[in-house]
Length: 610
Image 1 (cartoon, rainbow, N blue to C red):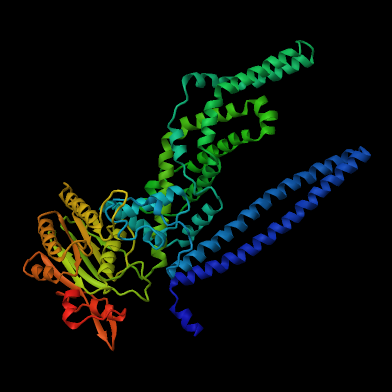
Image 2: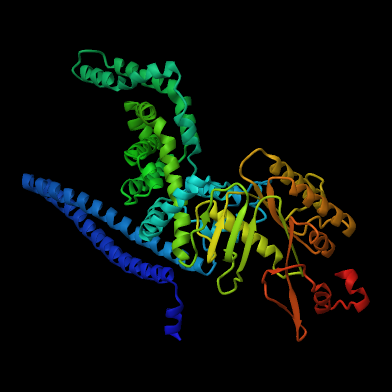
């Protein structure tokens, strides 16, 4: 039995399990090293105290030299211990990454980030297609660990790329996919920094601001402490009166007061930003040395030369500015040295040198994490294929064994489908729970994946660029005082407006249970009118319905194509094959479902309920 389980494992699962075991062994080794170095440091510290005591008792200078040498050893040991701690934590993170990957293979998502913060109320498709949420495409793909990366992945999911960008992303994804250890190293490195997930929007805003001219000219006064040192020296030599020292320190307070509001504003807006920038610097250092050679990557690599060093410097300056929150430091160091003003001057100098490059650096960081996500998805699913996105204006969708990417392979039922040209509507009829809505989402999700440069769940898949639009989950709104029917009408109006836009990219629409909020007569008339109207526009798509009369009408129009899902009753139980069939559905199950729930329907009433 165990051999069978091993045999059924995918190459990606075998890789993740091997990496998990390797990381566990490496963590044990790093932890032991850390503990030994901690003992060595303790011994060294004790030795420094003993040698210092011996020097104090004997006044022999060699004891002092010994104490100095051992103290130097103590500092070296501390540095090695910090490196061992980092390696230990890095290996812990690698374990978490691989555990997450293994769970994701079985569609169990450990990470809490749902991406729901990126949801847009009136987005063309993201709500209906489960792009964000507890069980969503975002959770399936997401391998980002920074706020910038998460936002970029969400943007890729919500906005189709150009065909040129899709092509270079596919090439880069293939290259990244061949280096899964690089993807995991990025994640584990980001996880070393608890502040990596923080926003840097305020940092972007600050970097574009200019210091008022008056304060810029006052920055040169940051060197006044040198004057104070000179005055103290002269006072000790009794060349000048001691009270002059007090006047010099009053100048310190005057200078600090001029900059107080500006520095306070910076620190209030950029809490813990220093540590966030250090985290980003660490990640960009990984990016600077990455071995990738695709066009997509080389274009970005050229933009980040020296970025890690520059961001690390900015991070250190912000961290030093945070020292002002310690009252003892402010009293004994901050005021005498004008520490805050020196930090501000350093930040202003950094801004002048690097502000023009900052946006590029953060964009590359975000792009890298988004690419890690789609490449990691490709590596985890070796049976998925890279779709062909063809450059043609009429809609083209050719799918062989296309499956829903959020349904496990053991339960997934795949279907083949072809649609070509604009002005066409595919009517999908079928009984309840037969798979109509799932099929619409299957098409939509795979087109979204294809147009962001990711692999899809299919044996073969080709499509042309299209703007996906869906109306599947319209709900009433108490806040806007609208019914679900009116909400659907507003949604359909948006579809018509989208299809009227002057653009080369056609609309591919997915409408589920169209006009379900009204009576059957109005529903049929409205659906027929909408389909006729869409026929004249730059759009094609699918409409699911229970309305058999609509299907009968569609059979008389050459731009309407009937398909269906069906269910059968076998030995008193409903059976679904979830397969797409041509033609209009002739078998419905509402009465059988009601009977199973204890609602007995007379045969003469069946048609009324169906």
